[in-house]
Length: 271
Ligand SMILES: C[S@@+](CC[C@H](N)C(=O)[O-])C[C@H]1O[C@@H](n2cnc3c(N)ncnc32)[C@H](O)[C@@H]1O
Image (cartoon, rainbow, N blue to C red; front, side, top):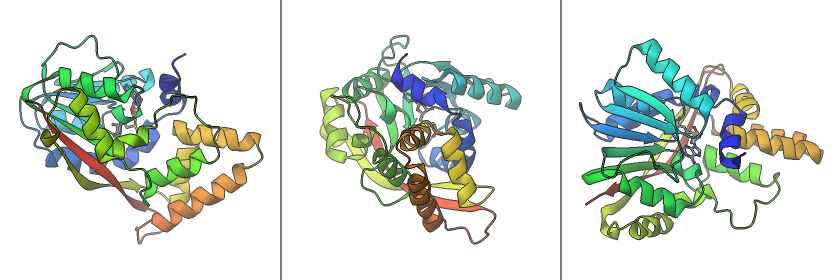
């Protein structure tokens, strides 16, 4: 079994995605999605950004490695009656079924960053984008003090070291590395630009309940707890994460959660 696929099929990311809808919609509005635009949404999950893109009139293909999320995305579009959006299984490191230069915009929000072989990912994204088109990525930033970077950092301390040669997904949050990958794919460095943006996790219950959802449904956190349990350290992990979620919560209402998280927004102009 492909470990990358197994990680994301293990849990149920739809349970976390519920807390990301509002920011997903806001981000899509900010990146200039227009009617008729051909959009590829890579690592689309159940459509947090793909569905808002389709609602703005774009013709959207969502690709994700996890079959349960592809199914969940297709169910959402069926229920909404959206005919200009479909989801299919695929790997961001190898988009062999997709023709060269076939999309105006390739979007990947916290998606392709999790695929192995980052140089192949950049090459594939560039290959399927038409001349004059764009790629927009959202990537978590290593060492950033906000939620997701900290969850991944804390979790790593409880998990066995990754196999030799493994490239951390977090390297997609380092500007020089990102530029290097797109330059290797044939894009001039000056066509790669960066800005810091914010994604707010909004949940209908307390920060502890949101942490519970991560513990039960988010593959990387599930794995960290499994490893910690084996060493009798699950209680420590729970305590560290609980302190993180509570301290980052900005909601004034104790029955809801609002946690802003900083990410690197990458825009690549494909010539
Ligand atoms: C953190 S989730 C983000 C999902 C969605 N973009 C969102 O913002 O809600 C990461 C997604 O990337 C997908 N993914 C991970 N590795 C992938 C790969 N190699 N190819 C395509 N999708 C991948 C996962 O299955 C998961 O849906």
